[in-house]
View: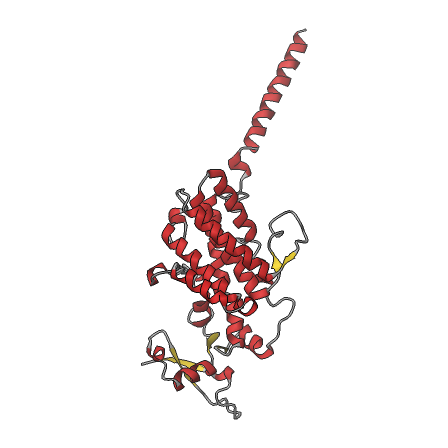
Length: 318
């Protein structure tokens, strides 16, 4: 009997020890990797969404189209090749297109809207709905028909919605955003990088986006869209202080993308195109006198191609 009690006691001690080890190894601080989080707060998600939209507005799509319109010139790196080819391949815009849906895209936007609903914060949801409209408007402006209504669900093959249908839905979404922001709530406050949660500025931005959508529908629906655009514009951004601006720091990875390829980080890879500069010079455009504008100096390439895009150099005015 004594031997059985000793064995039982030993077994109990082993079980307690194993339980203690199990609790230690499963403790949140032991399991969670602070450098690879599996969950984020609503405020952290919002910052990621806004940063993603900053990248869309400044990124490769705008730069490439600027070259094709001859407003910009590629003088170094991949910009030279892109300008020379003037074509689109199946990989030209992969990263830009993915940003619509992942890593701060539509999926994350829907997640924040759901969290705002859970917290009962209509102001927060309204701000996020405006960001959703910006995100999907960028997508349909560039690519036309894209997945939207079915894109944030469980389908691995979401349907493509027609561009005009998307515009209609975005107008309704912006109306809902304005209504939500007027319904109360604390909103994101300082976690909002653009307006610091200022309701008035966000509502003005929503009206301005509506005006832009109406303008984009003119060729399809006729001149009647101009009057709608004007009505929304009159309710839109009312002063330069209320402009919707991207936010950047001095850190290399957080600088404005255009600045990175023009003046810092990567050097002068993308500069003003000769066609644009010639037009401005011919018209005596007063903006050439501004310090941030650069004058184009042509240099002979040595092969009779004076002024060739690859040989453009810039010097500060004045």
